[in-house]
Image 1 (spheres, helix red, strand yellow):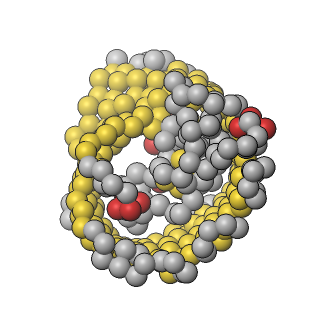
Image 2 (cartoon, rainbow, N blue to C red):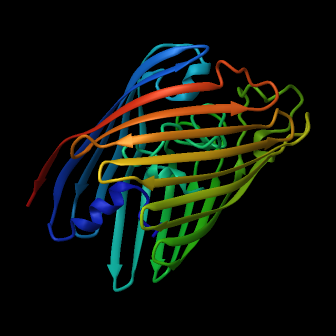
Length: 346
């Protein structure tokens, strides 16, 4: 069910027996990537602290420490160093009943739009990269945390989510930045049968700010230009196969220049080859009103040498007008290891 947004919610659900407690889980990814334009190496450390205050209240977070570059989209930008990101940091009230649950959160939250952010962690993502609509730099759905509140409800085969934030998933703003405007996002899903779920989501709200590279002289005030996005998603798993996909459409209005629209569709599948091996592939297509269309093809083989360890070897290629052949082909290797967890309960 979609109601559990991220691993932290699952942790608070499983820990109901304890009156209170603290747990910190983590994993480390070391990566090497090579393309015709640039060779890089990097790391990412993910921390999942959770403080269970009572049977209903939890303070939890997702913290990221990473080198730059690390993500494949970093290969097209300049700059080296280490940075940290607060992906989630929220106070949650959760209650459960037979066949259902309700969770209310406030703080730094992952966007509830789409479905990919549920397996954003390298240990859960069977491939190396993200679908083209997700990311950090001028993507339609930010991977960073948004300040706001949300509610999640599940009842039987249905799940719902609603979120109100201080900036747009298309252009995340810090609480200390100018040009913050209320944005809403929401979605729903239905589990047709075990292993098969379909869903839909949307967001709307102002996305521009006055320092944005595409905010041109003479443009209307950012508050008068609300972005709109909607999408559908599906997940199916049976036996050795797990498949998921999304279709998304984004509309970014302007007055000084033509309104920008973008559609993204991708399908992803993973096949378990044995107790330690799997193969995965993702095909994505991007169509835009003002930029060149392109497609992305990704393939990976994963091997688990030991418990909580994963080695992924991946290849990615882009195709389309204006795509440089050298920089559009990337080979990457990731080593992901789950570090010892810390817990204290009473």
